[in-house]
Length: 336
Image 1 (spheres, rainbow, N blue to C red):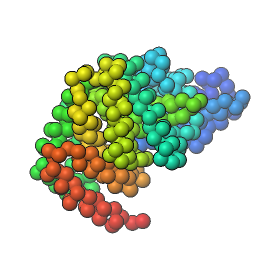
Image 2 (image 1 turned 60 degrees about the horizontal axis):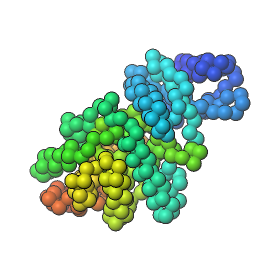
Image 3 (image 1 turned 30 degrees about the vertical axis):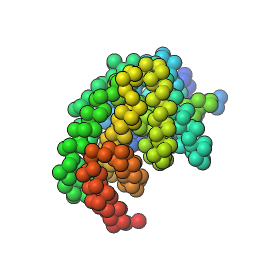
Image 4 (image 1 turned 90 degrees about the vertical axis):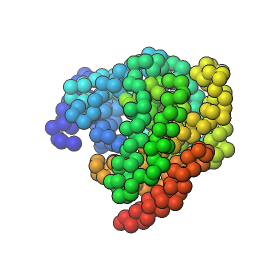
């Protein structure tokens, strides 16, 4: 980040609080998988705010601001937007602290309890937030996400051709997604994007929200990067969510549990394939570190759900016999 930009951000943040630059302090920047950076702003009275730096050439902050305001008005737990400077890409936000949900995963019992709490928040989001203003999670977008896998994981990183069964499973996963009721989808409802603040879970990083499948955020949570549930635990969580969605009308009575569970496994396979592609792209194109070592975890997620999609046995066998050995060998060849 250039000294000019940090100076401009500091000046703007001070002005929003009617203070001079000497009266405030900024913590070192913290980034995520994008070009965004976050600073903690400490005011003279000791209170804090978060300053988001999102260079307009790389990041469009307008969706984040619009969604934050709508969801806050709907009573959903999201950070308050104190001030915006979209021309420069500066936002001043409520400080939600330093406790993303994964920091609370101390043991299996506690972890399951927090996942149950987060599933309740998904229901709250789907019931309160109107999906209509959001972009559609349609077949084109689902397909583009799936295609990240052969483009970046297979071709660019492994130099491996896709199997003959790729087109069939691609079409089936899209069909399962489109068969579900359309709701508001956070799109990255993983533990790292849920902050525990004042004994309540708050959602962050929702700028990519879409109108899409009922099960997507459930899968983002249950097949996330920090925990691997057994098939029995996964089915239990899905059953809890299913009963609640049936009860409040998000799911029609015509959808039985077996159908919804299959849709969830298909959604999990779609997301795992997308993540395998994205993590390779973050490494190869964006020069980000720390992502390739996470591939085996999402490969486990992929195989866990493919084992329930019995009509895709050919692709499942390819994943086990070809993809897994190729990924593990490539990782073993990397310098430590």
